[in-house]
Length: 271
Image (cartoon, rainbow, N blue to C red; front, top):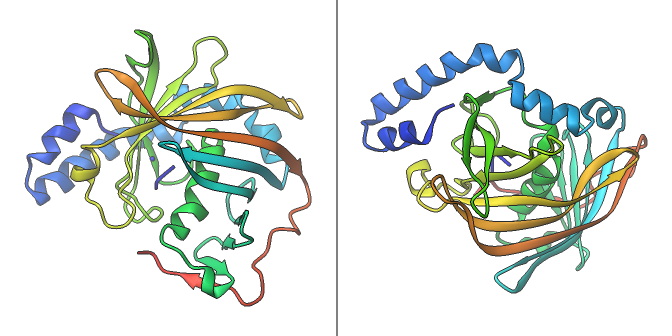
């Protein structure tokens, strides 16, 4: 899941290229955008300002409850904690299973609660929540701003985010970031998931999007309290809703002591 420059046209071209050509083209694009990334992409800079990045980073820890549903089925009910620099994440689901990311490894407690998708849960949902503050992380690259179809015949400005080699669990993931016109907040992100060994080419055949809705301020910082998930294409934007998440009880604190690995936790493998 990585939830980060090249255009879709280039992506299609890469799919038809040899492995050596793909690596060369990717490197050329990232070299061309690196200077702009280091200076902070204009769209990213305005998103960070709208989301009160400086105020958010003055806090140590954020926590929230999530109720996640896909295709009419409950997927996750949990409380999630994350340091504001994302160095540590803790997920406690309704069954009492605890996932803990320590900055490099994911752990689970109790040992017999290990399930498929545990590592994905430990990293993905906190990333979607933290997305406005992660867009300019080290190893991210941004395309030039481009208007793209969004919803209901509307068009919004976007930038495509990709990652450098060996960044996170899934460096081949990409995002297309949409910005709202009325307040410069994050509107949506289209994305692919290569987590678990799926190739970028295959994942790109089935992209999805998360739409950020129902923004409310917590300590003067705007947070989306509803996420909806959609199928997505570059030509049509967000189509056919497939899921929804309700976010509640958002809390910011300067005390991060409550986030720690429980004694007896065992590591969760990458695959």
